[in-house]
Image (tube, rainbow, N blue to C red; front, side, top):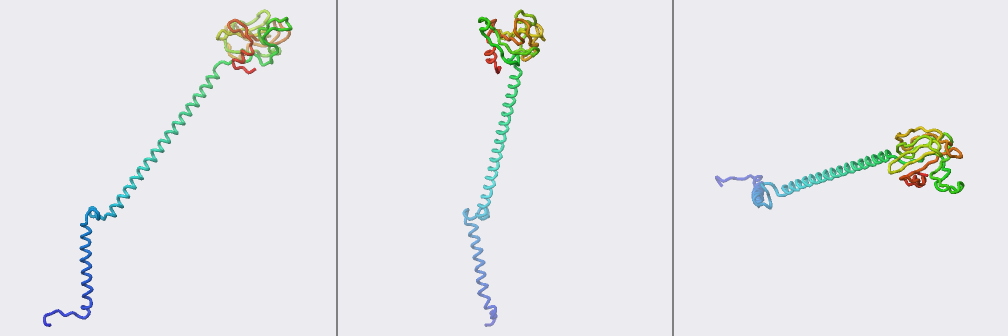
Length: 237
């Protein structure tokens, strides 16, 4: 036909393919439009819902991790504070115990007046027709040291009748101690003495049969048995 467009055999073969491609492009465009305008269930501000959800999940995870980290840090701080408090309390207890020991050590303690063994006890003496023996004797050799049994003040020192050379100490609480038959006296009247301080040396002066230390304890002026008295006051006999 004159004036009409003639297609070559090759063009006639390609025409259906081109038409199909055009239809596919149109479908994609239409589909994309529908997806973009489908509402909140499909997109959010132009971004796919899956991407939005993934981002939110990530943000939630980060938030949880931060909270978990804060919780861990808080727990560690609490544990540290508790440990420091325990250490502080332990140190305070130890300091209090040491102070108590020091105070206890500083307190005067009763002690034995001699290192020698006991040779005679308090009470009536059968070999002297029941005459009362008002003290305890220690079998100290001549020249052995005699010691103050407790802190106090010397109220007598020197010759004292049947006691020979003796020392008497006044203590608190109405208590006095007497030490007899010295060979030598090292203290004087009015002198302050401490528990365990040397008062002089044992001997055989006065009414004796041999060297020893005669020791008496008087409470409110009355002689008492020195052995139970000393035991009561913590002395090991």
